[in-house]
Length: 193
Image (cartoon, rainbow, N blue to C red):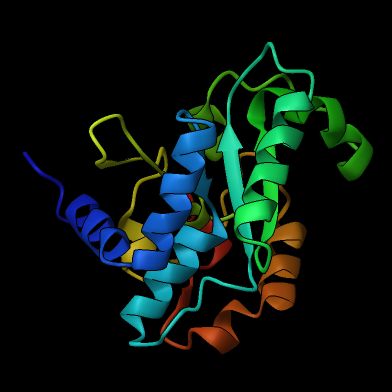
């Protein structure tokens, strides 16, 4: 049975010419890679607020999973995308390597991630844990291990799987979610999964 939220996600993103151009460039350099996080979340939330969301001059997260990579492939993808779309701030991350730098940046270690879905399942907000890519048939496919309901119901919900509530609250302030998208509902922590 088709999922209405999945259909809405794919329809909304496929109608955005710039988003599709980003995905096509990404597919050319790394077919297994996804656009993820804010670029997906913000595009959908802007759409639900009847706002235009310009995909230039923003940060775009690219994720992929390759345990054999030593960081070289990350750099290769980053340089390629920067050359084609220089106004975008690209953040390319091999999720198989996250455990190597997470402790240094966050003060605590994590076990190696096992997949894209595993990585997304640990992200700070449920609505951020979405990734989209092109497949070989030039169709969109996505990963959303925490579902799409919060994304489309405009719920800002803390995912307690990894980050603290304090980190979540800091992100709300620094990213100005509630100011940019006033229809969002901040879900109290005792209502999290």
